[in-house]
Length: 200
Image (cartoon, rainbow, N blue to C red; front, side, top):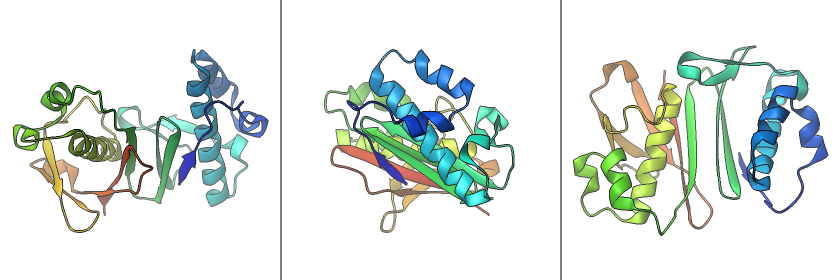
């Protein structure tokens, strides 16, 4: 699911109403209104989607930290992941299938060479442009989130290459990752987005 947000609008009282006290406190810690709105709208949408799937009121859902701190439902069964950037957010939900999702605004002023030296393998860095960098970046971040790993870990342990259609080819030697897959998602102009999952 994709959320398209009006970052200048006030947050929705109905969204605020389904959040826990801890989530509200976390939202209010953001200094900028747009950061608060992104967090409130995305968390409320996630609660509604999950609640509808398992038949629990959105406000009654309980989350806990899984391996490496990745949030999961205390009730179990459903896997989910969330990402937001600029005026857009993505939510991925799957049954018993680890998923990760990422969306990023492609900043034309970004230091692509500097970022690529941290995030990409030497082979991936050849003739990289802004769009190519962000396409690989979202695929890598989504894949690491599906695995429950922090994005600072293992960025150069695998490489991302165009595959068939919207699928990426992920090349790595990490046997414990299993059958890890990623695909390009349709994104608004000026953004890149990807979904990743670990197949059974």
